[in-house]
Amino acid sequence: MASSQFTCSGIAVIAWPERLAEVREALGRLEGVEVHHEDAASGRLVVTQVAGSVDEQMDGLRRIQRLDGVLAADLVYHVSEELEA
Image (tube, rainbow, N blue to C red; front, side):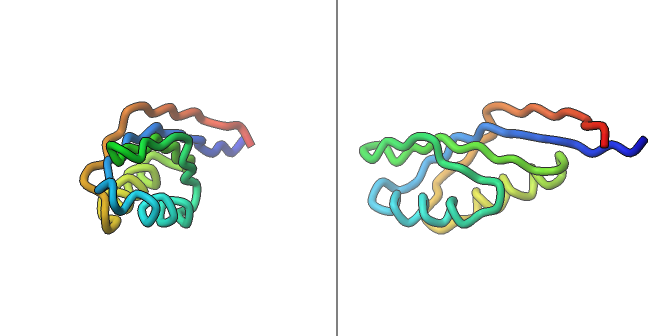
C-alpha cells in the first residue's frame, strides 16, 4: 500500500513593525501558510505551514525567511506523520 506524508510546522516570524501588513499579505500568498496571530507593536506573527514532506517544509521556511520585511523566521514546532493511501 502506498503512503504519503503530512507535515505541519509552527513558525515564529518577526517583521519590521512598519512592514507588518506587507509581510502578512505575502505570507497569505504562500501555499499551505496561515497566519494565526500578530502583534503590530513588535512585528511578531504566529504562522503554521502544512506541506507534503519535510523537504517542502524546509523550502517553505526558507521562502518565509527571504520575504522582504522579515527580520527572522524560526521553526518552533514540527509534526510529521505517514498517511496510508
